[in-house]
Image (cartoon, rainbow, N blue to C red; front, side, top):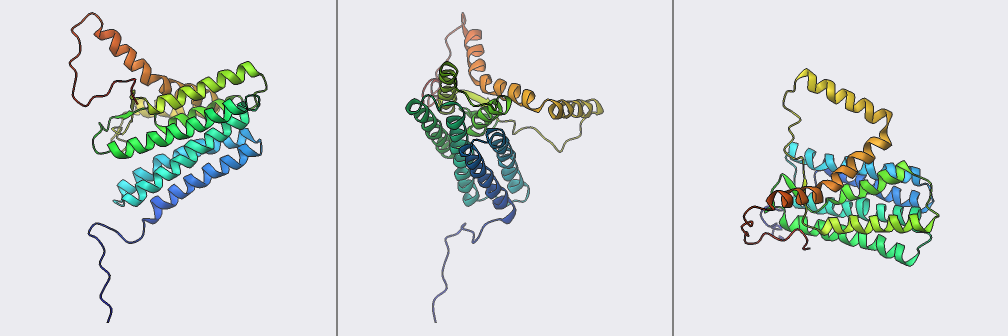
Length: 259
């Protein structure tokens, strides 16, 4: 008679169906966006990255609500993020804007993918030690969404070299922000289950109506402001400290310009 196979304590057999299905949908949308970008259908590829971001927001929340969080789910989510928010926007940017730059273009696209992967690895390592109210560095879904909303606003491919160079510089800037230590709001403290006043509900309804009527413009402004919020907050804090006593250095607190 064979002895029963012993599993290490804390290791679950299988995976939770609902969060895993949502993460799988995230990967599918990212892969679909890559295919559409390769085919030159930029106006179709860009929204797929945005929809993948919506699924990325849902899988973690649903896993916590259903008490099905696991290391497997966290690792799968990171892999999905590399595909949907690393490779997909890099491919979209390369085919949309860098056709006249060739080698510098694919190098900038590769830099975006690698910085996104480094950002995810750092997040996984520091997950239990960081302040939940903030992200350290620009989150990779936000960087990918910034690329997508620009393409949604201007889906026509870029043929002029000066404009392509400007787009390349913006791509490098996004990559640098992901591996920076600028702090970005996580909005994890927002409680969607608490009661709100009727005025707040009316404001939400108006915001949704504006988003529906002017989707591209609203998303472009919203994500651009979020991307700029990290460096802006740092510069604002630096300006407020100017003229006052020097800040006290805290052990282990990295400089906002270090990787």
